[in-house]
Length: 220
Image 1 (cartoon, rainbow, N blue to C red):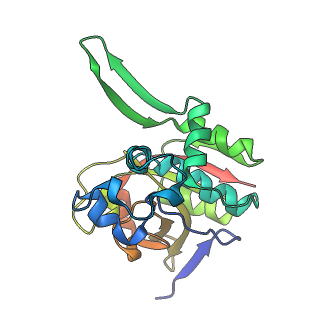
Image 2 (cartoon, one colour):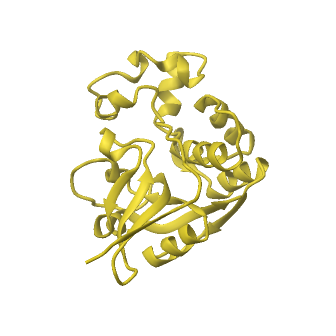
């Protein structure tokens, strides 16, 4: 049976949300302290502590960074520049409970703010919900990227137990002879291994297990 690959027309350079892509597994699983990342300064943070805080929380702005730098021709900038730009839009949601004011609940990056950040650089960006795999393929055929809300478990080799909580940049798909999506091609900012980072090819069934159906559609 024949397959076909559909991707956006421009190459999408990869950015990892950690300063050392080869150490992601160790950093994520606590085998190495984030403050001990030897490349933390390249992130653009003012200190190892600032890097350690935002490296775990920067998937959303990293996806915008990759999309903008590829589609708008913007010169690459450190990840922390994008974090600060997102924060300037009140883009990171933290909720405070009256009964526990000392323990705020972090909800993550607001999709509306991430879309606004992309639009600041001349791109079209709209929020989407209820997206199916066929919808993703249609966006790709129309030369549109999708920042997709998935489980962070997509960056591991183990089972998928939840949806959402993490963002990845979808820029391609492998289609079967009938046009159905067989695999999704994406950049995962926190993939634990090289195969799950740049150009990760995720089987459709596994992607669907991790995908919330929500995302941000980005184009020139």
